[in-house]
Image 1 (spheres, helix red, strand yellow):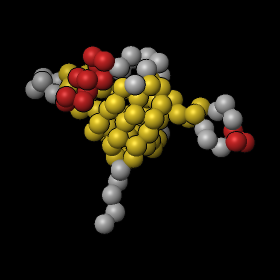
Image 2 (cartoon, helix red, strand yellow; image 1 turned 30 degrees about the vertical axis):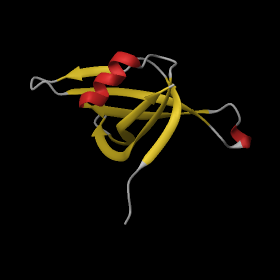
Image 3 (spheres, one colour; image 1 turned 135 degrees about the vertical axis):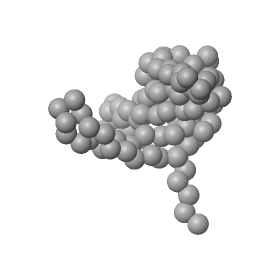
Image 4 (cartoon, helix red, strand yellow; image 1 turned 180 degrees about the vertical axis):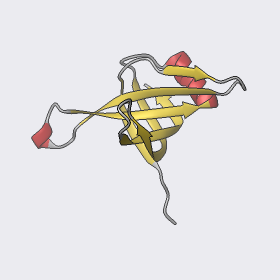
Amino acid sequence: MIRNQVTMVGQLSKDAEITTFENGAMVARFSIALPSKDPKKKGQINWQRMFAWGNTAAFVNQYCKKGHKLAVSGRLVHRTFLTTTGLPQKITEVEVREVVKF
């Protein structure tokens, strides 16, 4: 069985952007900085976009602030959207299911 599961540890780049919908659902969008482990790219930072729903989003909103170290677990999501110029752009995000704040 193949599972779409990722776990990452990094620092929150800025406070999460929170959206609350009319039905009460909440989504938190944020990114974390992941230092490169490749010795050739020492000091290089990779940024990973993430989003969380419901209670996980509420936890991120209340307890996780810019610079905090986080461990997140979730699944990779690939999506395509149109830019303001009308060109399609593909991105990969992590749909966060669990968060641990250090």
